[in-house]
Image (tube, rainbow, N blue to C red; front, side, top):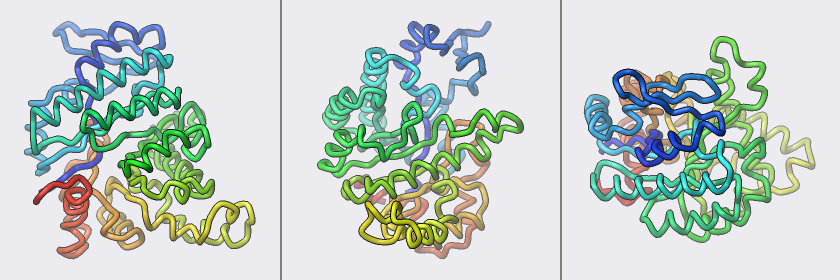
Length: 328
């Protein structure tokens, strides 16, 4: 069973609400001459929306990609963080109910991760209870919330609940630090997103947040950004900097070894390196579907990484199957 843990889905009721309310926040959802939805964020045109909400299109694309099951969740854009807490809460409720409906209506094809109004941690904690009641398997968090990284103590009440339930958290980058210097050549994506993922992992790790909440199961997008390549550097900083040892009981590699990473690094030798550094048991197939950053053949990229049969089977679906309780 091939399971893709990194895909994006915008429920139609969520889009309907964005269409009615989003313009006040710079999020414009209109219709073109053929009636197709068009989304603009601060004036920038989002990729075509149909595969984000049309389940039949999605199922055809899954078959073409050789994917049996998708884990679906929101994206960093537009997400719900553009809105005030009241509207964000409503957007989350519509989205989470739709994820649960999709999971029930297409058994064996989709797994849903909830979205939370992170700009209001207390409201997010309440919505988490709805996520559990709906039978969703975890939540997606953005790498920062209006500039505050995920190791901040403001998020501890939410983590207390996530930890108590042993829930999955998939982390996706948003609004990279220094993005104003990355406008040209789409470097905000090519460099900024992997950097942003690395920054939030470092913040979670060195703040002691990962150790404090050991039952949360984390998966980070884009192969963890640059983190697998930086393990040695972080270990050296741990040795020379008291600040970096203050909240940790052991070297950074110990905390990193318990995290999950998707395979979305676009290069089979890089997938091989990721698996070698972080362990085959911790790497999951990811595609970024249906964005234009989806590789032509994400399943084939894993197969071309020469991982060996056992490790390849783990990455392509074995790890996710065990995580979500799916039989092969």
